[in-house]
Amino acid sequence: QVQLVESGGGLVQAGGSLRLSCAASGRTFNNYHMGWFRQAPGKEREFVARIISGGGRTYYADSVKGRFTISRDNAKKTVYLQMNSLNPEDTAVYYCAAGTQWLSTTRVYDYWGQGTQVTVSS
Image 1 (cartoon, rainbow, N blue to C red):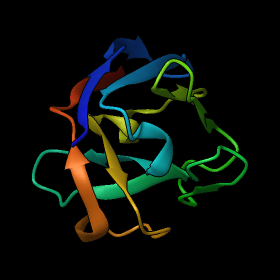
Image 2: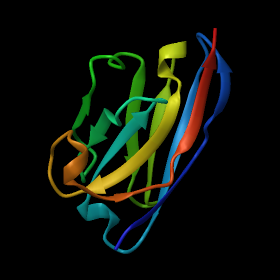
Image 3: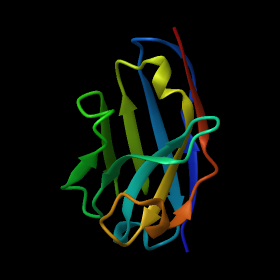
């Protein structure tokens, strides 16, 4: 069992930066690949970034590649999403998720956080 709690969302101007954190509880955090997803109003939840359980491999959606960076600290049981050069299209609720399959689809992730709101003003 893994419980996830996101933090770090907020309101930022276009071009600004935010760093999201996702703190996990449970002894098996190191066994899980971690992903970040987002959901804007009226849209489906979409993949943003993922990081492999050991931390040595990452993968990004094309829309955030070069602007966002996912990382993890297994000793702290925390995964991060550094978001730079934000634009209004990045406005959404951001969720972290844990799963055991190295895929980007939501259905393969077993545990989800409650989400944190990111709003980017123009």
